Image 1 (cartoon, rainbow over the protein chains, first blue to last red):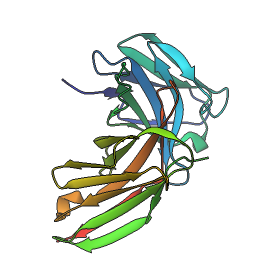
Image 2 (cartoon, rainbow over the protein chains, first blue to last red):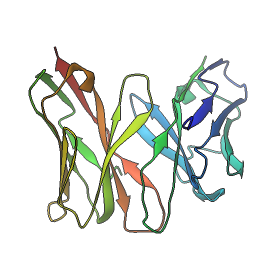
Image 3 (cartoon, each protein chain N blue to C red):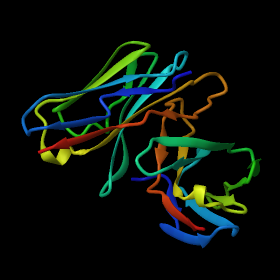
Length: 116
Length: 112
């Protein structure tokens, strides 16, 4: 299994530009999570999906952030317009949530976003 | 607010010594997990302990859970330089929400 795949691995963009981060979860997993990690704020959960449906987006910082999961094998996190304070490492993680309620999450390698 | 809080924030030991990290949380949980993050990488799941378990082992890792004190500890025995990383606890609530809340982590440095 290739694990969780994220693209791009690095993104440098100018303030005001639109940024789209992509994630392919592990096949068979039914939950997907988007996190943001910075030195100042640590690891923050932005949004998570269960069976492609957004369950909790309370961590999304503001309306500039949006996330979609059109099918079980793909999700995007979009920032429009981007700002320097959005600079961070963005992680996607997936897990299988079944009757046993296992919560082990498998993280992708992350996308390092720099907004200048 | 953060559910899990690790202690200490940073820990430096010599290779071969044991490393103990603690995690405290505030509300009832379904389970608690420990993850490791090497510099520049994503988090890697290490071990999960359920609320009805008190201790769990995995190789050189030993995790304990005390639900009465709302705390957990991660012990790494016979540490190696390769264990240098940040370690996070994550707690899952007694809901069907399916999410876990991560603490700020303990940075462990193992000196060769």
